[in-house]
Image 1: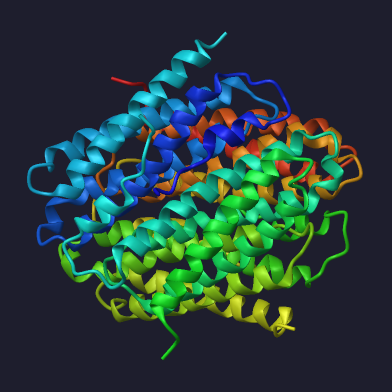
Image 2: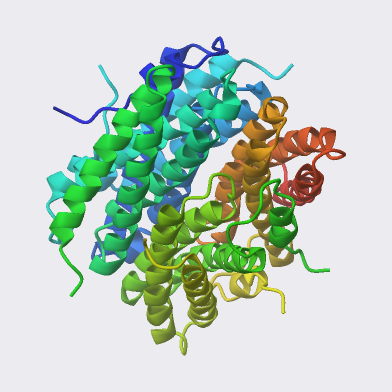
Length: 140
Length: 140
Length: 140
Length: 140
């Protein structure tokens, strides 16, 4: 009944051979999609909280993290003319940001349920990005 | 095991009362997320096809539709200081585009599996946008 | 010395005949670019103000407006396989939002200089969108 | 008469002291704005060219580069709760991509005027990103 992404199915229909394992790509794409949404909603919920002045750092990081996940999932969804260097750099930026954003959300997890949820989603994104970085390998 | 979005859970943690039913919002957000990804991947797969010159209209519409879904899901994810007019206008734009993009993808569904999948995802997005428009109601 | 966009020059190099006057498109694209940036910076400056709790509506509208300008300028920059309906709907959404965002920023113009500047940029965007809507014409 | 961004003026109205020189930030933001637009238009013009099948790599890199410039200029426009690591990683990704995209556009500069223009815009973006990276400094 749940709406589901079709990331894996559609990646598999690409006419060219895959450069990276498609299960891995699809997992990271889906985690970035969830993180784009959760960070957008968390920043918005922060804004409505009575303690908004305490949530500045959380909001700023969530806004950045949403944007970073967005561009990362777009690059991961493109398989034509793969360039390892550019994908590595973008996934590394997303990994860095989702880790820092997770840490900040976790600090507020006890008093703001949206931060607890968003922190978990950021951690999954961080882990998926890390797995993609391992698969791309080191710069030549 | 599947990665899932947390759209509904996180919308429900917002401190303010909801202006629109959160099930409906979450469904439309998830359909926009899936459509952002599917359209990005479909445009990219089109680009790698031997008949790329026949796929120009599909690519152009998929690129536009991905961007439209992106901004729409971001607006739907924000519940602070709701303004009916601006949400209506953006969801209407996404509804229009996902319908036209679906029609184009369906034309190629028999020879390109990515177009068949993308057409279905666009149709779900069109329907969710339509349901949200009904819930927002007519301009005053 | 100033960095300038090349919107007009690059639109004129497109191999197909233009559907809309390129001066008009370039003007609207440039106003959307400026508005994407000004709204992003204004929301961020709001967040750092001592009266952040009074700036909630301004922040929410600026975040939405930045995203709307972003997708609008991307659609305006694409001339291949032009579809009047989809462009009209997106430009209409951007026109609506930039007008509402301008009004909110103007309310804060006396005490926040970033709101004064952002309000002016939103007004220019609103006017450019209006001119593009006139050029596209009514739905058939 | 030309439409101009207000990046520098609006950055200077931020209530907090700047972490990075605002001239430098504004220059990089403006170069990213121009590159977002030029790459979007170049990918679109490629799509309409008779030799579209030869332009696959250019299109893919231009689409990625537009997205990367977009998220980079958004992060650069935010000065609240500055985090050096996340900005460095994102600007590094944009620097990498704009350099690779410039090189590809330059290969087509003689037969496609949009590629010549886009290549120049990418080079300016690459240089601005490099200057920002120097200002941020090395990881601790």
